[in-house]
Length: 317
Ligand code: FAQ
Image 1 (spheres, helix red, strand yellow):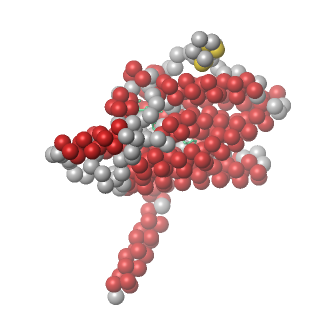
Image 2 (cartoon, rainbow, N blue to C red):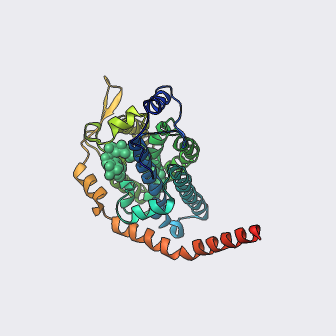
Image 3 (cartoon, helix red, strand yellow):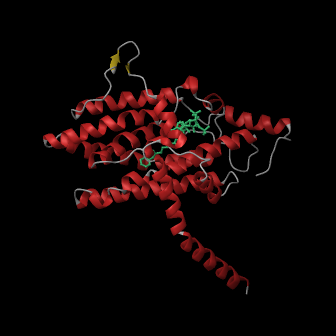
């Protein structure tokens, strides 16, 4: 990647004008290095999250309770892999290859969403991943459809369409359990107890502690703040839980008439910091699995590369 500290005033003015006028910044446009770096960080983290996020659900493909549920789960997990691919392709427009992004993940230099470091212990967890994790992801991603980097914005529009189906299938699966036997309802409640707080952490630190938010909002890369999006998610999820008779595990959750929103309890930020530092319940397992899968798939990439070289040689001859 080339440094572009030596830019003309008119290049910077053109960039700022585009952002101010709600136009998208495209790969060939001049952009400040810090903007390029921030978009790449966010998009590559987002891509890694989609791919690592396949692991907790993948763990349940062979144990889905019915063929119908298995088919749905398989399709959903494939969608997540596809989202990772759109996002890696969109991020590559910034001049970094997918191999470099994956290497940064393996070296511990790139993050992925904290939520995927928690285990999926029962079938009810699969419902929670759809309802809460995809639910939180969509709230964020709907907002990112208007992000100022063109390829990211377009990827988000496509991803949101699929993600809303994922959320509904998770809610529908949870509803079946919540309205089932006493044991099934208890299983759903236990899963909600374990996934609720990590889902709130997905939105990142409070605005006052968010290192990147201020600049990202000025660039319109982020359109709404971590706290605004988290509140929207809480306001959507609470009535959904009530409707199926499950209890949000927060004694401080209370409707605030004045704000027209729910007040909720304090998030355990120490736990969040531990998880993003690599010390969550499944961090090591997730990364080791990704590295192993990457190594085991090397022969496929080698074969495709060899085929491509042969095809090119034939075209020249
Ligand atoms: N996990 O200054 P901020 C999905 C880090 S997709 C890990 O607020 P920013 C689909 C942050 O990177 C879910 N790290 O950062 C699916 C930064 O550290 P750094 C993924 C986190 O970027 C469903 C530091 O903390 N979605 O679930 C997290 O302005 C089901 C300071 O934070 C996206 O990635 C976290 N939760 O805001 C798949 C959406 N939060 O990089 C399978 C796009 C913060 O300086 C199954 N990303 N950090 O070392 C974003 O919107 C933003 O990047 C935020 C963080 C909001 C995540």
